[in-house]
Length: 635
Image 1 (cartoon, rainbow, N blue to C red):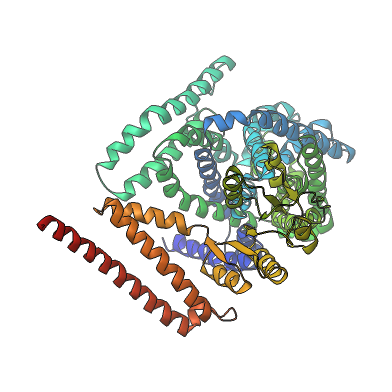
Image 2: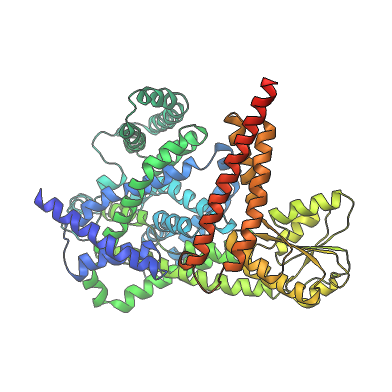
């Protein structure tokens, strides 16, 4: 017991120390976990042979992650991805395998070894890539969705790969390899039986091919039917207990049970969990499942990355550093070249193309499984497997650096986009609307539908092009540039609407327009009170907080449903609105842009006084209304 507590303390302490440091330095949590593993393993030797066993347990985090991803995808969305799954994903696996196979054969190895190594390195790290895409908010980009499609295809491709590798076995030594593969004293070698499902309770061992197919289809069908028909009654059943931990237990039971069924029929548990997530995507219990599984997924994935770092054989690395690093970089370059070409073919451009290329250029955690299986089946020479394991680990460690490279390129690409030639503004109007996002679109539709002409400017080329498809003309360029505003008719305009997303750009726009046209009526969009104060000082006439009116209307619905009449609620809403406008003007005079609001004592004191005044006004208004009703009834 004390040994377990010691090891748990070591792993958790390493994560708690290293990951926040890495996140603060902008390196991401994955690199932090990997560095934590290196520190407690090769660097200080605080952990030992239990790392390989622990890795099998930690790999379950990948299964949970795919289950959660499946919950976010409806079956229709998955069907819409079929072209990318079969086309983009299938071509990536095939072409990468052939390119790396050619490189291995050029180094003097036979074709069967080259094919096996090509299959191993065709896979990318689902755990690292999806975790990083989620952290950076890139999952919903075109490049992120394409990367996800390829990763899903790769996870499916592991199944035929495991079936193909035994056919590539070299003659002799099979039984000795089986024994060698199950020897945990071999550092870095994953227990293949645990990794790909040899549980001793297989449902397909000894069956003919058609029997295996039927059992596999039956297992998949059982998962789908269970998700559709059984989960709702079970959730209702445990709801009667009203114990929060029962929901967590059921969520874990769903993931563990499905994974076990997949093991029994020789399929990837990650694939089964993903399928179950898709089936439950339309369930009313989806958010409950997400909240229950998410903490376990995060901890297990972190543990997996720590074990990868702790399992690196630095003795071999330091013995042949140029060979190992050179081969790891060669894999990344060859794989990246294939991904770049495929991205171009599938019409990825700019940031999305580089995100797709750099995020998938590494080897993946399933590579450990295939290497171990290849050694067991005598497909790859034993002295080569240690190098292959190290190449996989090193490429995974380089991945966070590839995302840093993507961030650098993304910023440069953004600058290039901004350097595009602006449109020639050949129209003028008395109303200029700057910014055609969700806020500006509604303003523009309302004003134009009321019979007034507008000129629309925006620096987002995609937004301008999308608007043109609906028959509304707009002009691309930097709307804060004086020449563009003058071309749009600033000299004769009556109203300027500043609806830009960028707060700093909006302030610059209002400042310039007020300086050029002191008589111009400027209406500006603001995100919060701080921006209201900045726009007020810049010279805006009307400032609209983007959420204020909708929130106030929602508050009116609340008090109406608490028993107030529509008239009473409307009067309270009007009073609140007028008082808030008065308060903002007063507080704007006290606001200091060079001092944090929480440190501005004069501002805080006046804000409290105004809030107390508001409460008194509203309560007094309610009492007057109540008295009036009583007088009418008595009369």
